[in-house]
Image (cartoon, rainbow, N blue to C red; front, side, top):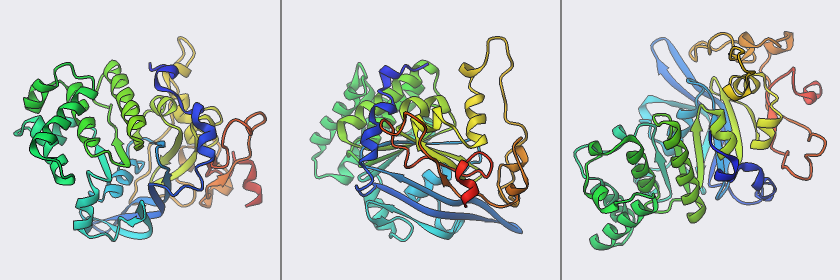
Length: 359
């Protein structure tokens, strides 16, 4: 388990986040509705998702499979073929550029230089027929004016920054000659090769063991702090976001059901789904007691239920849950107002949000 001191946890920057509201975000996803057409219907992948990432901030998007978190990441980079989806509503802006309407030529300039992505499985993300060094220098040469020699020197320096003992050997190696942890370090070096203002990390530690997971997260944080790069971390692991991220968005069935600083979401969880995710963590279970689990299954996104999408798995559901709850702001808890920015803490629940009676 990663220690808070090692990863410089979110609470230490809570007051800084409060002052970022006036700074334009590097990523602004606003009320995004995305559908994937299928035979006799459509999969409602995203339903009114709003996510903002400020410069230098580390933001987590957490949820189980099918929550829409990876679609959010892929749409932010516009990596899904445009013929495969329909934008019903909303927008995505990267530092003022409308990602949804930008030309493919514009997107090729943005990807790699202004925003980069680390994928879940580095073996499929790296070209197995091309040496590691060539893959890194190609990106550097594409987006900078560096010579071949300068690009090579920068690539080796990046590998060295990843705490790789023999960067020259790795530079000349093929991906299949390296371990999973080493390949993920290469993906981090590749992502930071042009010092992007935003890095999207989609489940970057899922395929790694716990020890290597910790090393990869520390490398991400270390490099981001050095370059000022903001990170959007996509994960299903509440333990990771609680120790690595400054703000958290909890997604379920294509919707954001809770958001706030890490301190708010982890220590004052409000939505029943967030509480269920935290309750399922092994460290929160009593010795010898069975692990808690959220009952039921996530809904079919092609046939979403009326009202709250979580209602059929929720033990707190009432008649009010037949209506879709909006994200409602939460009042600060006693003793938190001066230490934590609670203005962004909100949850979509008719039952657990005190302010719901005023909506």
